[in-house]
Image (cartoon, rainbow, N blue to C red; front, side):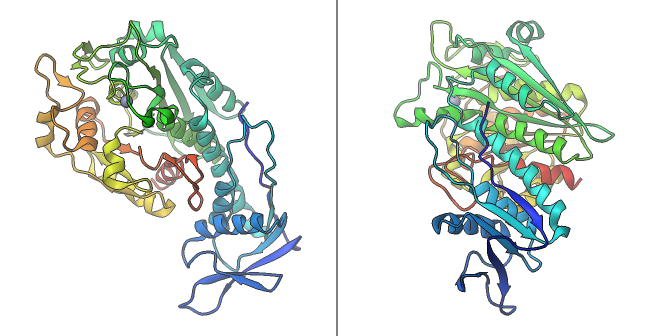
Length: 438
Ligand SMILES: [Zn+2]
């Protein structure tokens, strides 16, 4: 079982515990929270109630206040509640003692119930994504990851299907098989379906490398330690479909997560090997550490068999993304400007910012193979993030597609506002906003 620390939130007409009131003194000034202790504290500026919620909960904890009622005076209860809940997350499953106290938060105003409930559902989904992302590789090899997700979807209108190694081999998922064959833990393809509306489905694809040692191109240095989080894309699409079902989003959504462990062994794929992908294209595995795009390419090509309205993939794909944009902003690129812009707008609304990188045709040359149709890296070190997208592009051809490289924001080394150290679940709220606004 995955553990979700509880933060109680409800709506009341009569305040309980410490009363905290949002006060806007005049149009120009920041809004402050006024505590009944007669203390004022600036917990955020106007317009960022998500930060408010996060700062408030930290403030209450630091002052050992266990119960508080919030009088919001028109601020978004959904965002304040979300910020509070997201900042309260802690991955405590493997702690033998956890003294973290829960804070009971009440929102004064029974009319806020729907907003607070929405925040609860969204934060539950982000917690699920974070829990999965934070799991060590030893605990969630591909099939166990899939089984855990199945259990989590119990009681929700989400159909879960798992394609195992033999079937993947039979169906020609050459990319997934090649990357997964170095590990004693066989690969799997996790498919989740939620039917909330009519029309073509939106297909979400999430990279699920449960551990990325780099394969025979073994990673060197300390960077390998955190590579259990290379399944964050998969964790995020799981969280997204969970939220879509909880919130009864009126869309058909299919989330696909190729799951593998990329690890060297006598059976591992070699640099220079040529493999045949699910789409029929051949690829030279020029570098075994560029494995994410191989499994994504198969999953994207498979996603097209559902005749999707659009495909969005999420992946901790390249270190170059972190170099270019840092840990708070993800890269987005794709073959459909309307889709890319819509995702960027959703990112603005949810404070999960995306920045577009170009996928000009001139980059295609760099992933063109010599002994194969394509190769999985270019021969130079330039434009690393874009090269990832350029490699995926031909596999998405024919469907509107966007690729989100969130290698930076998927995991943090320290707490930041509503994001907590470790897996962040970045992308879940953005995708839900995107699905809701269509
Ligand atoms: Zn890798």
